[in-house]
Image (cartoon, rainbow over all chains, first blue to last red; front, side, top):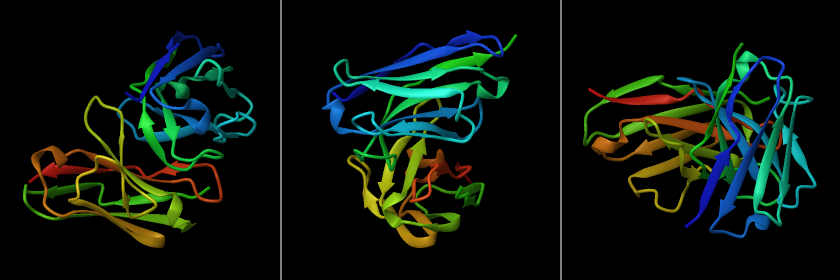
Amino acid sequence: EVQLLESGGGLVQPGGSLRLSCAASGFTFSNFAMNWIRQAPGKGLDWVSGLSSSGATTYYADSAKGRFTISRDNSKNTVYLQMNSLRAEDTALYYCVRDRLMVRPGTFDIWGQGTMVTVSS
Amino acid sequence: EIVLTQSPGTLSLSPGERATLSCRASQSVGSNYLAWYQQKPGQAPRLLIYGASSRATGSPDRFSGSGSGTDFTLTISRLEPEDFVVYYCQQCGGSLPCSFGQGTKLEVK
C-alpha cells in the first residue's frame, strides 16, 4: 500500500523551529518529486515547498523562502521540512504529498494525513 | 504568481443533478498542470483530475474536467450523496509557485 506518514508537528513559540519528517512506503520513493502543502484551520490549501526526485532542485513559496528548507534522504525514503523563524500564520496542518512528476512540482497524487503545527506563545 | 479564482463559492444542488464548477486563472496555465481535488471533512484532499481532463486512478467516471488557457471546468454528471464536499483547482504551471483556488463547497439543496 502506498503510504506517507508525517511526524514532527507540535506547539512552538513564535521565532522557534521545528523539523517535520515524512516516511514513504509502498512505492519507489526516488522516482518522485515530493512536496509539503499546508492547510490552516478552516482554510484552503497552500503549497509550501517541493523538491525533485534526486533532491538536487528545490522550490519554495514566497512565504517559505529564507525560513524553510526542504530536503530528502532517498536511502531512508524520507522527506523533511526544516522550519525556522516560525510565525503565528504558519499554524496549519502540514501534508506530505507525492508528485506525479519526477523533476518539479506538478500534480499531487498521494497525500499523507498531515501533522499539525501550532505557533503560539 | 498565478491566482486561481473558483466560482461559485458555494453551489446548492440536489442528488442526481449535474454540477459545473469553474476555475479561472489570472494568466494562462499549461493544461498539463491543471488539477482538481476533492476534500471530505477531516480527510486529506484526493486527486480527481489531472492534466485538465484526465481522471486519476480511482476517480469515478461521473467526474470530468475540461478547459484550457485561463478557464477550466469540473463537471459532475450526476451527483451522489458523497459528492457534497469541497473541491479545489490547482496549478503548477511554468511559473511556479504552485497555487490553489479558494475552493467550492457543494451543498445539498
